[in-house]
Length: 123
View (cartoon, rainbow, N blue to C red):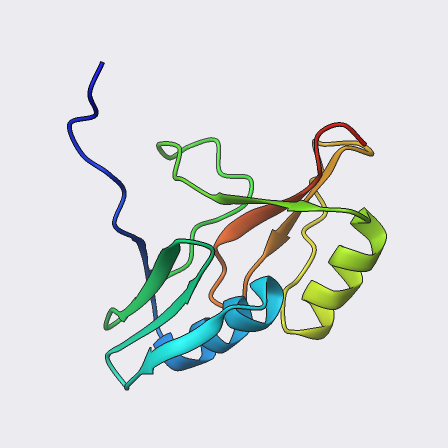
């Protein structure tokens, strides 16, 4: 089957695009390729993540069982503890609810979006 489309990039709403681009740029070791007050972008490994400023932005709650499921990013890592430590040093926080046991950790980026660091498959 032929794909109908290819993923161009992912965009996240936030209050401070430059700060969030800096955070994900550092976490992923990607380059910040655009940074303005209203919009910023990081690129690497064949895709990009954009960050758009939304007036009155409110982060999602984790875990929020009363709202519809929102997307989140999963990132492969070699060492969960080291990845968590690095992400927290860069501005992430670790919520109390952790459903992944020793296979993955849920973290919240500086804008409050949940993301997971997951042990790379085969390890």
